[in-house]
Image 1 (spheres, rainbow, N blue to C red):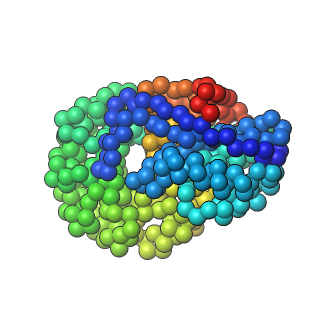
Image 2 (image 1 turned 30 degrees about the vertical axis):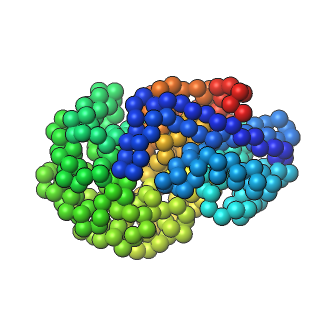
Image 3 (image 1 turned 45 degrees about the horizontal axis):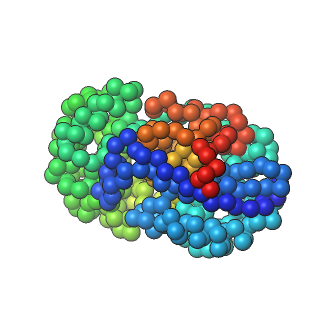
Length: 362
């Protein structure tokens, strides 16, 4: 199964409502889509989200990296030689993790097709069903409370609450949401780097003292400040998760060695795809640290790849793969099957994606 060509397209899907965090507000999911075409006629699908404020990658830079570096490096290689293909992919250009992720995902899709098996079985086969949380965007306490109530009515048992824009108001947000949904629902906080270290400690302690009961807090401080992250981890009872602080296996190893966080959030757009994400999983197993499998604001193609990885590995104990359910429609045939919080993998080969909405996107 020889790689013959890589074709780039685009897909845009409006969100049900604006997605707001401490650093950005988004109204649609806009993905760069790739098709990796082989001499056997098999096609591998992949995609990448342009999240300039997180990864530094834009739509233009993703396209440029694929066309000018990745495509030239791996066309002509055999999918059967998976390690060689992925080594070449990762070494042909530095950074550009989103572009690498899009092609990495398509390569793994083809690898599953080559052996006629769903990808999660080839990666470990731990389970074939998952349950995701759902994100509550940062807004007024009243609006966030109403959004939380609606999510619980749909059957979501875990809510990921966006905070980090105003620590005093964040406390009120969490108190109001907990009061509204009760204590049978798990609440996660995601500050998206929005607090200073001492501010994070003060805020989280006040939330603890209010009896809100938080499962974890994600990336409370700026990504580069590992000492600040460790300060928070050492001074609050709520488990702390590193997200933007961890892109590479090397980043993960440093966080684990320092015990700067209690958990790691793996995202394919940060790691450059499944290849490096698997290395982080192995490190986590060695260090005894649980992981979350998360996503940027991505569509169903790349999130399906994340679902396969999450299903494959026991070290991934928390799931934040709600991108497709935030979209106003599902244009992809095949892939992960969503029923609100419940995600099931089909048994098709590779990612199990049958077709995209229209060839006109390419």
